[in-house]
Amino acid sequence: MCPSYSRTSYKLGVPVDMLLTHFPIFLKMAVWSQLALATSSAPIALVALLIIIGAYVRYVKSAKYRYPPGPVALPLLGNVHQLPMEYQQRRLAEWGGIYGDIVFARFFRTPVVVLNSKEAAVELLEKRSGKYSDRPPFVLLKELMGWDSVLNNLPYGERFRKQRKWLHDAFLSKDALVNYRPIQRRETYTLLSELCDKPELFMDHIVRWAAAMVLDIAYGYRVTGLGDELVETAERTTVETVIAGSPGSMLVDFFPILKGIPLWMPGSGFKRQALYVRSLVRRTLDTPYEMVKRDLMAGTAAPSLTVTLLEEALAEGKLTADYEEDIKGAAGVIYAAGSDTTVTTMKTFVLAMVLHPNVYQRARAELDRVIGPERLPDFEDRESLPYLECVVREVFRWNPPVPLGVPHRLSCDDVYRGYDIPDGSMVIPNIWWMTHNPDVYPNPERFDPDRYMQMSAEDTARVDPRDVVFGFGRRICPGQAFADASVWLAAASIIATMDLSFAKDDFGRDIIPDAAFVSGFVSHPKEFKCAFRPRSDRTQSLIAHTNAINIVAS
Image (tube, rainbow, N blue to C red; front, side, top):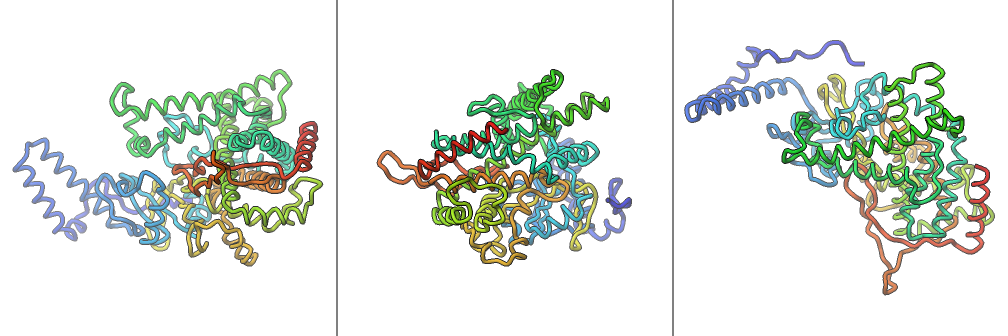
């Protein structure tokens, strides 16, 4: 918890001892202000004088603190001008190489702490999670786009703890995870069947696979195929959210006054786009919830998280409008945050396997040896497939789905390694660098599952990328175990049953995709082509038979 005391502030003026200590600086400021008064009109001179005094007061206040090292900041801009528009995680990693694994910067007037090592992230975001579990204001996402009721964006407090408990109960108990296995099997076998029928649409099949699992868990809703309305609406919402959340649009997060710009005024395009996204967000959160509520009243609702929460609220007489918003947010975040990152990981897996056929064949040989041709892989096989485990681990490391995580916010002053970290700091874990630091992972750009096979069990556990890619502390993704298991089963099933190779162009030449990823909040692989086909007629019959059995059973 935060201590009840804090350092002396200088809100009312500059102490005399500070004034004497910095007299030469203050004298220069006074001279500059007199020159401004002598050569300019009074209003301009007054503004210049106020700016100078404000800059000096901030300088004196900052001089009292020993911040972590970082790049020199400009007045007003801070260090934001030094960030590129794309792949910002790389610039933050460069700062880490110069200043160390904890870097202090300013984005406009907001203090920012960048954590470039797992050690620093664990120490602050986990061991001191009571101080570091808040979120920045997120004016664009929350106030304008309407993502204010989902767990990812909630400020740390009672509402956050309520939703977090709901999702922990739904995803962290072993019984709950075991109960989800029939859903994971059903949708994975459906994915295999779709890859047999229309392999060229593999990216659409992956989106449907991920969405179908979470929509069943969240709402008891069964996705029957491509083109499902709920899947398309939610996919469109997440895509438009990313587009509307460009760096230029996010200026409103640092200057909230911009949210009041009239829609007719030049420069208000970001606001119009955000309000359009807001309509999509409402549809994504409201439509499935109202469907479940209607079915529950009719006695026809399938089991789901939303049904459980609604029944509890109705039984206790607390289903207020605010409570309904929390239920919508808890169920909605499963899709919005869960399926998009799972899709990214599965697309990354496919890309890695296309580019590294030797890895694919080695994993297949292990599956053939352990499982044989008479059945498909299942969860109980996982401990017997160590090389496949290394492949999945390397997929998460090679392209962490959310390179910079979701920023935390420090709720009170703190001290770390002798450095002062001020209250209100935005804290950014550079997950991409944590998984690409060559001191931890030699040749980090290379996809190499063997790097783990050559480690001891202790070292493998110490550098497991899954310990960082799902976040830290009280903000860690509650669906981590479910997502990891879903990716494992799909990867194992694809390797066991499908031949995977380069697609061909019109001249029969291999189309070799680039190992490239889209810049942004979520690091999707760039669009690429590949060729899926079942290993044999016998394998295709096995897929069809297993798929039919699981559809009937569920």
